[in-house]
Length: 274
Length: 250
Image (cartoon, rainbow over all chains, first blue to last red; front, side, top):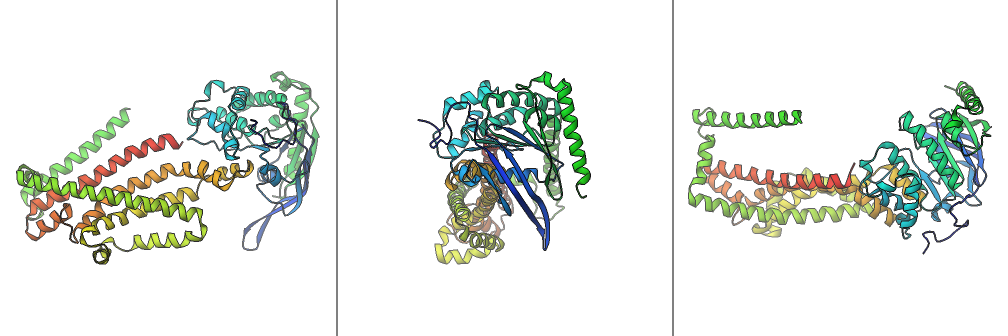
């Protein structure tokens, strides 16, 4: 009795996932009568199977819109998103996208265990308790499966959200500023956790963040966006060995990359109209 | 903790000073002969016959209120679910609910005497008064569930049905119980109002007949008991609301 009915990839615990391709995507939002704001202009990004990409950019540059398009939550005006060979809507129907949202969107009336298993119940699949326990252990919450989200700290809630995103063995993980609301100390330790978790999973991942450190620590490649309209400004490969533990963040290679991304981000902000 | 104790103390002090002021105003006749002191109002209950009268009236009113509350709440529940799940019905039901609310309940009295008979008018008016707050609370909780829930449902490929039963409905539970909390006193008030149109017993009847027979203290006693009933209903539902809130909300 597997929790996953239709497997696109082999169901081993290391699931490298599918390639993500976003090709020349443009999106305009309507503000009011006759007023339009271009959110994304000809944006193309890609992630190879098993690759971790991060998208950084000033707030309002459309990076969250980009993620919502990849998740099938938003329809682009032109261009397309493909996960493997399929559009996102088809992959969501097969329950194979995992998303962790900025506001965690946990359900206060369910326990941690039930929250992690929720995607299975929502998808109409029988929840796999063993997998839930495995994920709870992975995010370090084995002892808290019976707790309610409101009894947990902000950092622990985000770990639950991350575990929940992985419940259905996704072929693509999307993280929309999952640590955005946390304090710096918690955020740093969760980044290290995240790095470890991801090294164990190896699933294709797209992370949206405004923290350069976070992007450099976690990603294989960082896209820097400029705003108005949102567009890709730079693409910086991160050649750092994995696993990247706490010590990596003090190496010259790491600091140089952080600087390189930061400079690109500053240039992008300068080029952003307004 | 200290702050809590102070606020309780202040509330108590406020209530006690109003009661004392009432007693003095009544004794001195500041507000005329139709404003008796508290001691005289409660004196009514010393008489065994009055006690029996009031006991019968209160139990009749509470019984009718309970029936009215259940009927009103069920209608609100069913129609709120209908308006949420069947978008074609939403506007019509909303308009109907607010029209019913906009018309003074008492003006429905004569209509329901003809439709439901004088004996049932109390229950009908009580149910009508209960309906609106529950309907509004439930429909708005269902409509304004956090956007993150919809995103989650879409991303994991949930059916409309799953998303409704696993996300929307449990999310709406505290608001629904909050609606019940508003609806319970409304049921009691609606029933008392309805009793004026010819129920055989109840607090409304005691109020009307005391008024006609110029039994001022008895009128006030009936009014006080009516308040006690609505307040009791509110307190009871507040306890349930707090439990629901603890269980279902942040």
